[in-house]
Image (cartoon, rainbow, N blue to C red):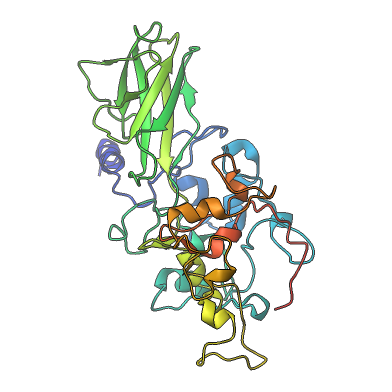
Length: 382
């Protein structure tokens, strides 16, 4: 096969996004703060690989930290260093990524291989220990659960990256989602200035395949000033232009997700990913009170805060601050913020005690797997 044929085939694969390793931010799109774009060869080597998956490092966490160990990658809350991992009674503010999957102290067990086959497979391959890829799929950022063999990697909150600039110019492109609360598909965006000038005078073309092709090729769109403009052929993302712009400048960004290997929320019920390893913690209010006839206290069983129960609408709702609000969205405002006032729009996201879509209290109402407010310095008896 000639070199030209190989290049043509590779271009076709990239344009069609056929390769499963090509979802942003690992698809070759420029990433703010990184000198080179993330692509296959950022992690993999064809020969003399140190890792069993043809990786350039034996340990997966080291590969991830190659890019994620500092704040240079933007708004992901890094750095993640080894001392960031939680050690109850000692410190840390992240879920561990190198511990055994089995932990009696934390009610943790390996994921069920029938219910969570991809997660279980990776725990087994890692000698019974968890790793980044047990919960996250570094290759697949799809949104729908039917688009890949390994579950719903695109669950979670959409993230619009910082914008990178290739070329000269003082112009600024600011992307935003057209509508909040949806789940638009992950995508990479490149906006090339076709004709320079101030916002309102300059024109642009947009690419959805990392600059391999631009649309439209013959009639560039005006870079409208002040008002956010929806991108052609994409109903999900809009941009605001502020100039002046230089012809040939390319502004790149991407829309992605936490790349979860399994949905964090199913049918409105939150913290479903936690269920894979912590099933004992998912307890009804009746069980948590020790009143479940099938799960009575015996000195060995675990009892936790109720999970999956509607706030203000459970069998012990008289004890809830939002008693009588029937688990609706209005219950959210009945919860107190750290200052003792009712939560409101100004409550920081990191401190918000959020209910799931069904109005249920769930694991992540109080816990955060990464960048938690608590340093895990206290351990409560269980």
